[in-house]
Length: 73
Image (cartoon, rainbow, N blue to C red; front, side, top):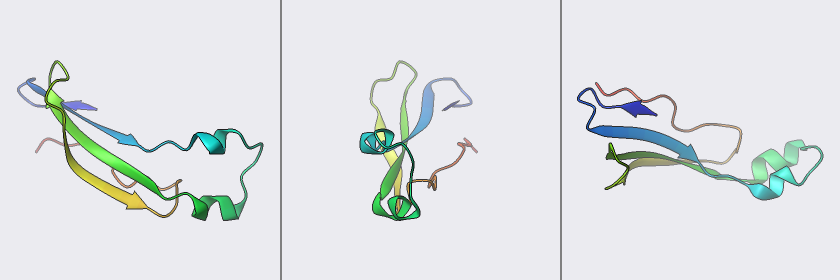
């Protein structure tokens, strides 16, 4: 997450979770390709209100993060 330069907004990312993966003892190479995962970039007011998704992306591999760090430039 990152605060805007004026402190009036906050941006954060989150990545889709796959609870069924936590139930397995080990992951196989075939598991990686079975779970497409979506990531989101959200911008909201400082108090968390008015949250808006400004970007999203999907990966065919749940280990790959589509959206990285946030920069307010």
